[in-house]
Image 1: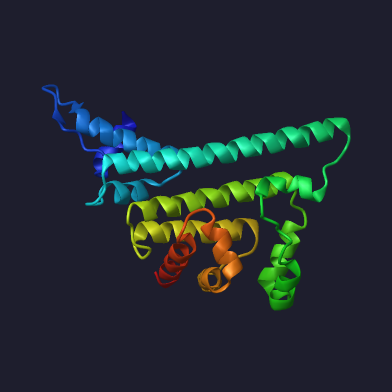
Image 2: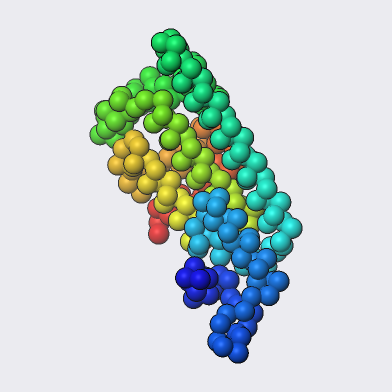
Length: 235
């Protein structure tokens, strides 16, 4: 009940009326709206983002359910992959046969944390951010990289949900996700200022390797992300 009260207060799910006793009354339309909100909430969207999406003039319930189903299928596939990876790692641990580097990182598909290490060292090795990142990641184990990947995927899915809802990258909801992305980098790698983040956003488009890798999660994601990051840097 407290949740419904809060949703009413912020205009997210407004009751259709009141009973004679003054209690909130929810009809079919309000229940369907609440269902959509709860689906998006389970997918990791913030309430402000959800409100922005569901109030779009071009928004339809069928489109919302279709998008939610796609996001859930993608999450389910990813979780099944992680479960399989954990099972293989557990089996190797019990047998006393450590996994190779390739096997340990196989859960990430084409992702390889060390792929651009030499290039990055040459370009930014003198920077405080690079040294901080190198120091932090040196102690990361497989489960840390899995957590990083899962968290990053969640941010990508939030961006994709906003794209599907025709939310412009300069709107608050999109900039909030860009800020979450900046916080993700600061949490796992180095202190990422808005200036540094803006530079990364430009690189996501300028470097075809980054663009292609990001766009694997959804066509046009790199461009949308870059624009949202730029807007957030100016906010």
